[in-house]
Image 1 (cartoon, rainbow, N blue to C red):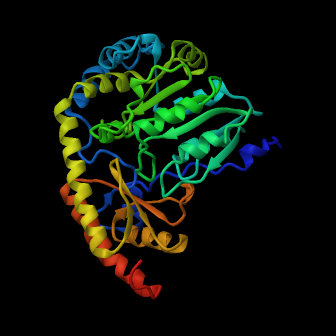
Image 2 (cartoon, rainbow, N blue to C red):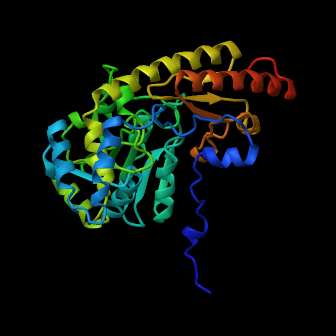
Image 3 (cartoon, rainbow, N blue to C red):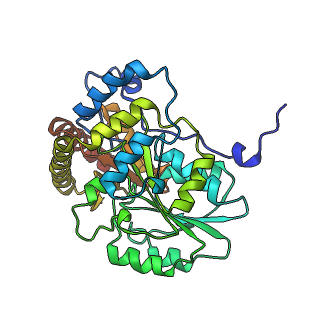
Length: 373
């Protein structure tokens, strides 16, 4: 029998939000709305879809390992040298490459509790030592993270806005934090939701900082509507990007993902429509939470963190919403067992979600003999 390494045996396989077709099979429901994975409710950019159809005929060819065309489009758009850019099959793969390239099993990787579950999974997968700092009122505590740097610390992971809390740290907070970080500690800034936060004048756009120990990653899965085709990008100093190319799989992202991303970058109309709908849906949801007395955390992203009395209540809320056709995310694996994440949707999806919550939540309050949380 093959001996499995202990750190692999102890891993929990990543559990994504329940797929629509799976819930439909299970519950035999006529209508299902998924607001669990922070996806774009309008689907994919029409320009991206056109680019995919145009390039299907070329999928028998290997892609350029350097993603030359895509990288040069990014270089022009973000005013970065091509040598400062890398792309891959989603930002998840970039997390892996960064851990592999810039840490060993004896090193310590530092981050916050209640942040992106994909980071925790990758750290554990590679047998690294993880140190977690408590959230401060559901915000990443930059001061405490800086105070907990040790000689073993090699990478600090920060999600801004943070997934799944939706909270954001400011320019001044980030700049003060970076002043405290030793030159030999890499800061990895995950900006998956930057499109939604960028309108805030206090948002620290990571691409505005040219630091030798900073890598910024972004994704096309959320606002650009390309979650199913997997494409992420990273920006950093040339000497670090060079090392990442040594460990990355050579033929990613795939051809269709690259062409779709190039087209999506140029579809400003779709992006504006997405941001306007996000703002509208969040207002609708917020009003509903306040009417129902559901605790929520103010957000800088395209989702809300909802807070319940305990893990059991949150799990039951999640399950009852599923039974009524609403897919949301229980945040136990993110380190917030009493939390639920729900993202923005179309008007119809948002209204459906509010209707389900209005039916489910009062019944749970009655079940647990609670009046107001």
